[in-house]
Image (cartoon, rainbow, N blue to C red; front, side, top):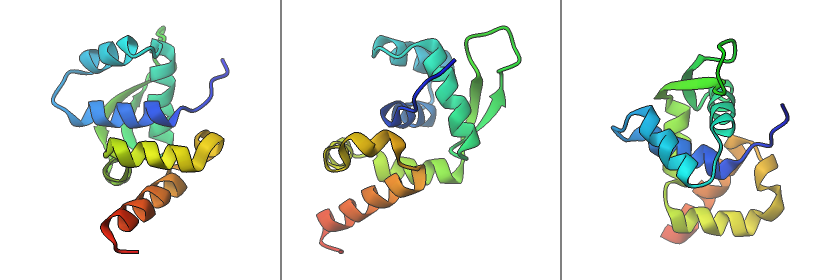
Length: 123
């Protein structure tokens, strides 16, 4: 299976995991937004590898889901705080353009933090 990383989905998963909702409800909302169950599970697995989530590796199970989130890590919260504001997120995506999907979590977070500092007059 070949899938591309989708930073919008990464952001949405973090936002969903932060709430008190059950994971099934989060998946339901993401599926309603057009994401597939395999795509969601793959991204959870990637986010575990990237240190954004602590996960259960479900890739060995007979399932479409490769990863199940347990909780957001410190690094995950740091990324989420930088990416939380929808206006800032959209501005960053517009500035970064087509290279968004290829950026590391750290670099994307740095861009978001720099833009937030600019918005606050701190740069």
